[in-house]
Structure formats: structure tokens, C-alpha cells
Length: 295
Ligand code: C5P
Image (cartoon, rainbow, N blue to C red):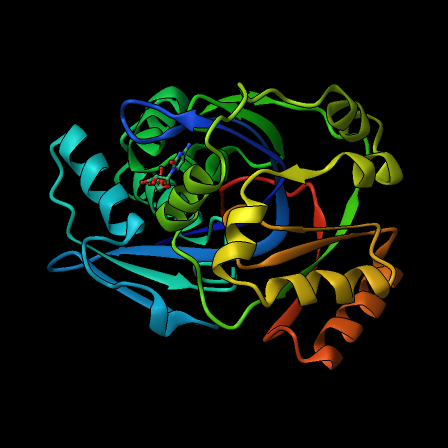
């Protein structure tokens, strides 16, 4: 018997970052939007906990207990007194180390899959608690759709989205470490204001207004990501010249995100990005997308 769960990637349409807190994390106003690029996580009983992975970038995915999928299964097992002896297989399609919450998606996916496999009967709140323990972005991977994340990003308030938004994601050659990008943010930002969600951005999401959303997106981590990975500036410029309505670094990067008018425009921007040689791959996806779903 096995259980498979599909989990989406995310883009941050606003990532407002405050000063470092005493625990080292940063307070955020983090507007998450789930996008239709998915990992699929399958769990099946086994002699011991084991992780395998295939798909683009699979060779960069850790297969030991540092993988959030393995940690999720261990935490759930510990809570319910169940030995975490499962084989977790990750069919990877979300760019690895790209700022699109691929690792968080795998954590949420493994948690939901094992919960179904073991029939724990855990409540949604309990699962979300475990997600928050795993990482700041993991609760959002579980719920999907769109949400405002506050605290370190783990306290979620669902947001209404009034229409589909179309995106192109340029996958960079290489990855960026999230802690390193936050450290660079601290170096570049001696005094960070208290992070607040932009009312114009929330209105644009609610109304499904792509032009208004394009005018309101922002990412406070972008200068830090560009400082650590300067070639991203060219990728952003190529997407903008090709007609993207907005271009930004996705989360802590180095994936870059291009908001476009419709699915047709997405194809044109993707082709221009690939032809420019400034990225390894260009992926087209629509938002919002549902959260973790058992297949
Ligand atoms: O929560 P998560 O494990 O995904 O965070 C990874 C790293 O990103 C943290 O160790 C921290 O360096 C940084 N981070 C942060 N503030 C946040 C979220 C993440 O400084 N709100």
C-alpha cells in the first residue's frame, strides 16, 4: 500500500522583511501565492526510513534525515508513537534551492501522505503545527491558494484571489542558501522598517487585476539575492524586455518570476528567456494552485 500527495510551489508576490529577531529569524509580511508546478511525494511502508528522489535537480536533494520530508515523517511518528519506517519517494518538478519552497513542499507532502497511510486522524491544526516546526514556509505548502504569512511566515491568513495569474519562472544555474540571503539582507539593511502587507497588492489579488498586481509586487530580499548572484539582473532585464508586466526574484532566489498578461504571453517570455542563455530552464505556470492533495 502507498499514498501519493501532490504539492505546489509558491511565489512571494510581496516579501516584506523586518529586522532580525532575538531567535535569528526575521518578522515578515509574506504574501504567498501557490503556483501550478508540483512535486509528488509517495510514502510506502518499509524496513526503515529511506528517501529517494528523481526529476530535474534530484542530485542536489539530500536523501538523509536533513530532508524535510524525512523530518516530517519522524515528527508525525514521534507524536503518534509510530516507528517512521517508510520509503519516501519524491518526484521532483519544483526547482531545487530556487526560492520556490520545493523542500517545504516535500515536507508538507510527506506529512499529509504519512498521516493518510497511518490513519492518525490528526486535525488540520495539528498538521499545521508540525509544518511550522519544520520550517517557515511549510504551513503554506500544506494550505496552498494564497495567504498572508506573518511572524516568521508561519502564521497564515487565507487571502481571496479573484482570477488566474500567469507566470514564467526562470531557473538559474546554481542555487542560493536562504540563511545566506537573509544575512546579506541584514548587511545591506541596517534599519529595516516593520513589515506590512500592501493594501494595493491585496486589492489586486482580490480583484484578479494583473496590471495592478504587476504594479504592487515587491521582494525585500531581492537586493540581497542580486548582490550574491549578480547575473540575475540580466535575467530580470530580458524578461522585462520580452513583455513581462513585472519581474522579481522569487523568495530568496535565485529563481526569477515574471508576471505576464495571459498564457500566450507566457510562451513568448519563456522563449525569450531561454534564447538569451541567462537561465537554465524557463517554466510556465498559473496561480493560484491548491495545497497538498492526496492523489
Ligand atoms: O524556517 P526555515 O527553516 O525555512 O528558514 C531557513 C532560514 O532562513 C532560517 O534559518 C533563517 O536563517 C532564515 N529565515 C529568516 N527569517 C524568516 C524565515 C527564514 O531569517 N522569517
